[in-house]
Image (cartoon, rainbow over all chains, first blue to last red; front, top):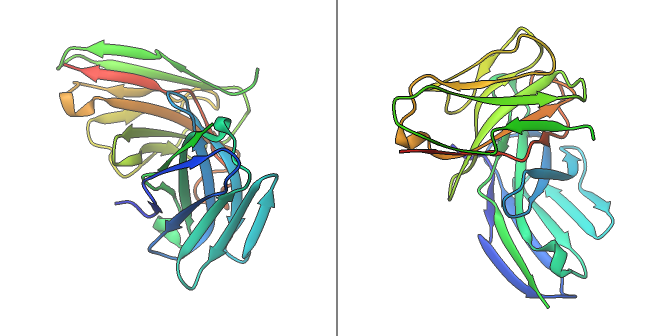
Length: 113
Length: 116
């Protein structure tokens, strides 16, 4: 079963606009990670946020984590056509057998010129 | 270039045939993983290995087997392929295993398998 669920499933924006993707999860986590996947390629790690962190930045990426709501958001500022890809959140469980990295179904982002 | 190498990149296979997907990493990572990616279902963990000599079952292990004879290699075998195993398979690695505070995963480029 999926731990993380991304929203929206697909997002189309113009270059220069900001893109926001959300991830909700079900059980307590150790950390939450965001990955990017270009069409036909493997996943690439973008950013990791731990359960005791609320916000993290990396270049044009901003990730927030709300453990009380079991949700996270990924913001890409000033988007570029090259940001077109699928974005996945992945959660690391915090207890025993749940301590695995589980991926959501992803958000397909299209940035148009 | 350091990273994960998967082979083959693409394969068409008749149902009932045996198939091994190869995965090699040169980062000396302890843990390795096999995921399958299907449209609408995201990535699902098939098997994993926290360290050489050990393996574990993921979310969808049936019909698949793995071995971890050394740190670098983690082959995935389909003993008797069925059409439902048509998918894109990704191998990944991480510095630490799933029992620890595992950080990021590094992925290969995937193996696209079609079972007819």
